[in-house]
Structures are given as structure tokens and as C-alpha cells.
Image (tube, rainbow, N blue to C red; front, side):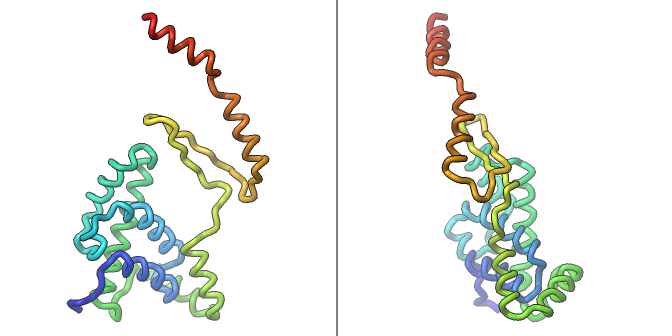
Length: 191
């Protein structure tokens, strides 16, 4: 296939297709989709149209430079490895979809699940696999200074604006009062 589509959109469609057809387990597809959503934001235009031109290691380095301390190194390494695996599978599948096979254990487990489902269940599983509900255990990173990030965890899924105001009030109570900040600034100026 010389005119096969190796674009970003074809790659994302492949990830979705791999869940529906049982090529990959939903957890694997979800992890790969998440890695793609993170790293592919930094693609250059020529890379977007042909992912075979993409150097994933260079893309991860580019992402790290632009994102700075908002992404932990171990998370970036995981994204890099998952995207690399996903692109390798995508390119192999694009070259010959009829003979393509990922790791046998993944394929067997995924096909067993999809064979027992009706189309409605398969569609629901695909939606959950590709867009999982937010977990209350998600960690939200909030960069507050160039060299400091604060993390929030255990935010309830049904957080009300009153509860958010309560959390904000506690954080405000932890802040150094403006009078002390001003006095510290004046003390530095006197030196």
C-alpha cells in the first residue's frame, strides 16, 4: 500500500478501531490514547500528516522542554514508551491489516470479550475505554510558580461550588499575609 494514510487522524482512528475489533484490550488502548493526547500536541505539521517521520524520543524531549515541571519524568517516560508501541502497531497494521497481530495474549483476551457482546455493549465498552470517567483519586497539578507545583487529590466527583469555596478558604488561610510579605520585601530593600 503506497498510498496508505499515516496521519495523526488515521492513527487515532486505529486506536479506536483496535478496541472495537478486539485487536487490543481496552486498558491498553486507553493508556495509548492518553499518551497520544499528551505528546501529539507538540507535533509539527509534516509529522501530523505522516507519523512515520516522527521521532518519538525527540518529540518527548520537545514536550518536556515546553511543559517543564508540569509533567513528572516517570510519566513522560511512560507516555513515550506507550506512544512508541502504539505507533509501531499502527504502522505494521497500516502496512498489512490482514496479517497484523499484536501480542497474542492481548489479542486473545480482547477478542473473547468482544465476541460475547452485542453491538450496544461493544459501543458502551469502547466509550468507557477511550473516555473513562474521572476518578476521585485523580491528581490535579497546579503550577503556582516557575519552580513549584501544588497537587490536589481526592476531589469528589460531585464537588459543589460551596465545597470548592471551603477548600479555597483553607488554602487562603495558609498564605502569608500581605503585611508580612510587604515587610519582608522592605527588609530585603534595606540590605
